[in-house]
Image (tube, rainbow, N blue to C red):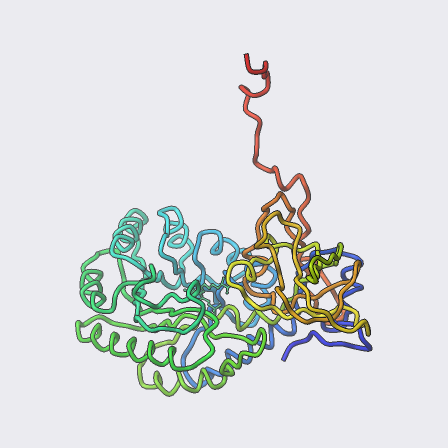
Length: 424
Ligand code: LLP
């Protein structure tokens, strides 16, 4: 359930009409519903109430500090994958003791920042990374809490670009090598082993892959404990899918029930890293139709949001539902919705029957709260969209629309270009 509904033909976000907000803030515009974010978090968190657990929202899905703050206020921790995400999380007021740091390519400065911040644990993805963490912890005269990210080699049966738990992916340490790696980690003076971690992919709509991975992690814990190593945390990553179109992912209650059954007697705190399932359906992208044109019976609706604003359709052929912000009875038409970017791959919708949108209409691109703004760019020198958070009948700009000056911030004209005397 979410809080985007029609009231007398007008799309509302909570108690405010989307067109009123857009009238004020312009397009393209990301709009998030605070109630939806909270509700999704609470449903997910409560589903695990029976066991000792920690939900670490995956910041890559939506890292606006206000969005993070909403979840932090609910008790959430954060799963970060960069110094930047860690910085944002701390800005948002997250408790460092609820932050886990994953990612295959952590830099030394980022590791240092995380150690200085006192995070809960590093999810380590290679032997070399372990060495650098150990060295950095030695410099700081401390010990780094770590889990090894184990690659369980299960097929999440999702889009190949977002599956991460297969051997052919770059993520994690192979199952077979993991015990040896744990043994090695135990030798490092500045490493404190605290957990086991895995993450198998994203937008997963079945329980089976999660359970397969979980079973492998359980045997891993057994093997590691047999080495005399104390394991307190089992991090099983994120990945639970949502409905964009007709997918029927397991409800968080079912997902949790299946997991809780398996881990009840494990004597571990279970860490979960949901991203999409919390934020995906808590946000939309509002965009305005600039022009329409027809060619060889093909209709194009050209809007003011491009692949730089929402890249998911171009990158993964993802489906996002589109709704009219104001319903009309103009019938339907098959069309492409395309952006202003100079690439044929710049589309939001391909060949779909939808309401017959006309010039000036506002369109709501649904399910854009996760991997929407966070994946946006300035390609074609397009200032990035504004983000607005709605709470009941209040709307607050939580990131202002970029301007041209933001585009060139940090760029300089070097002295040797200033007195250019032609091509002599
Ligand atoms: N934990 C780790 C280590 C991850 O790599 C990810 C996502 C998550 C948690 C959160 O997964 P979620 O619960 O959101 O499925 N850009 C793609 C999705 C990439 C996901 C990357 N990792 C998309 O737009 O579909």
